Length: 96
Image (cartoon, rainbow, N blue to C red; front, side, top):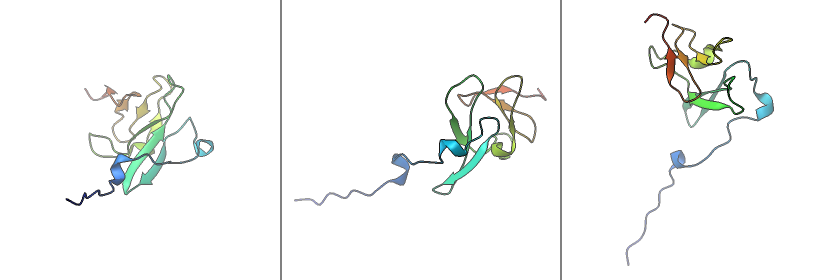
């Protein structure tokens, strides 16, 4: 009879990040779980919060230091102004 090895994989489970009462829908909130930096934010076009890696793919600046754009409702990086919609798609690159 073979012994079954079942290693617990922390990355295949759900974890609470923060109470909803602690979130401000008008600005991004940084959180860290399992050593991974995340940003929680609420798009203006959505009723639910979104969670992304807390880094802009351009220069790896923390998205949590950005803001939610008043006009588009997207998450805007504070470094170069790249914007991301609720699906994580880059919708605006000001320099392009």
